[in-house]
Image (tube, rainbow over all chains, first blue to last red; front, top):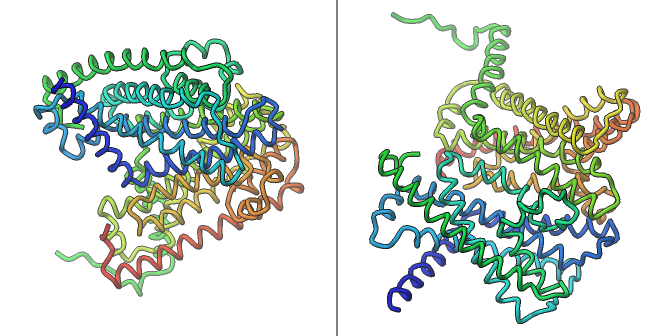
Length: 263
Length: 278
């Protein structure tokens, strides 16, 4: 019990520390707070222009645009997590510290995801103030659970991203590549049913699909998003196991080749 | 042994011109290779080929789902818009990285012609932006139903070149501003998003609120994209020449503003000894 508490305290303090670090970065403030507002505005105008033919509400667009920001923050915040520790010279210290390195990474990736979720709040406020968007939830009691499921699954995916991107020398370039395709195939603004059939199995393996589904399910959909919430947790376990293996592999390789601090 | 060096005043106008040309041409090429962080395949391909490809698909899917317009409408807008990535980010890096890499004091200590130095940075990024846009247009043609009338191809090319130039010019202005900022790429990202929202890339200008239409007239890209859309439908130079000219003038205005700001900041940095202050 005491160990579990100590672990939770470690993860929490690293998460909070990382949130504060990201808040000091102009780039992360931009992709978390500004970019979703731009994309939400774009979405509002586009759906307005189409006369809401798909029956999508402003809330649909705001949540989608906010979640796009969450993905960007996860992608860049986690993708570069280990690389930044290398540049700052803290990687060796963290790897050799008595605290398990995977817990440090969990805290760091959760920090990025939690920070990203502030963007959803910013987008909702933007929608209310500028477009008169009503805030409503069809299943308000499920909303906290949906948010938690989305955060946990994206955090675990972030950890997998952090451990795999480190093998590529330019993690940020991979971030630039993977921003739009994930926005597209996870149904953040465009429903999956409008995409080719072969895209759907890919989307099922991605946490943002289910995270988005869980949040939209609790706010605008007529049925409770139980499947989406369960899928978030199932995927989170899968990502975490894969990330652990990846981390062991990456650290072993770095120790063997003596490249832990080399870029 | 002493090398004979002609005093500057006795150098003929031809020598001065040749020196300026060398600074423009070789300096430009070298700055591209050394200061543009993305000028290597491992970054260039994901960022300037992969990213734009998916941007096209994303907006084509979103736009055609949300509105009744064809994916081709969004594909053209975004295919031209992706040149901003190369132009704005490239120019920002080409100027701001001089300070970050510590070469700015050496550059400013030389008596090199500033206009040639500055103009030389433009060329590789205009070419690069053109390349990225042409690639994206090809993706639009193959996958998203973009059609270019053969009669308007030359005009499309001219309008595209002008648009890429004016986007590079606003990138130069951002680069000059970055000499005073901690993170120059913040502004570059803002410009890119602003162009996406204000300049008719995805939303026709007529559907934007009045104040946004006003802003769009002051930004580069707006008139160039209008010209490209019309020329793609077969409009000739007589029809869209005015739009291209306005785009060119806007681009020149931004380039002059960028050069002026660069000069101003150079003088101010010398006076206040803040050349290397970050």
